[in-house]
Length: 171
Image 1 (cartoon, helix red, strand yellow):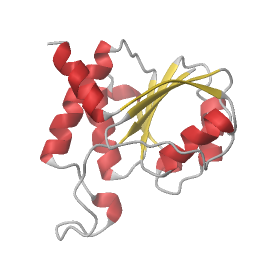
Image 2: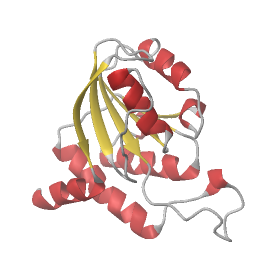
Image 3: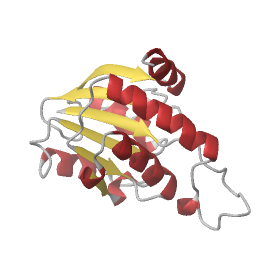
């Protein structure tokens, strides 16, 4: 399985007066526009996810929706509480290794520090290994058998700036 790990794009800051709860923070207009360019770059990387699994938090869901629209794949977008901040990563990996194990490419969309910790665990077995996921950053892992623990190989980790440059180069 190719596992693409995407951090949500730039959202309104915590404590913004127009947002009552953290899970309701939307993407900023510039964050959504930048994510559209990043999604175009994803297409140029010849990605073809069979599933886009997203945190239900608004900013992650909006990020996943932008990607799904770019791939004309709204029907493969699903929400998972396991991808919420503090979600159960072990259960997430059980789902990926069970129900979705037959998918060649899966994208997950979530939050920090959970995503970096998950990447670290899948690469090394230790969540303390330093990995940095910027907002809108994308990581590609190859997994033989999805499970919680060391099971992955890092293919690449791209910053939003690298992805935007890639999209611009494709014009």
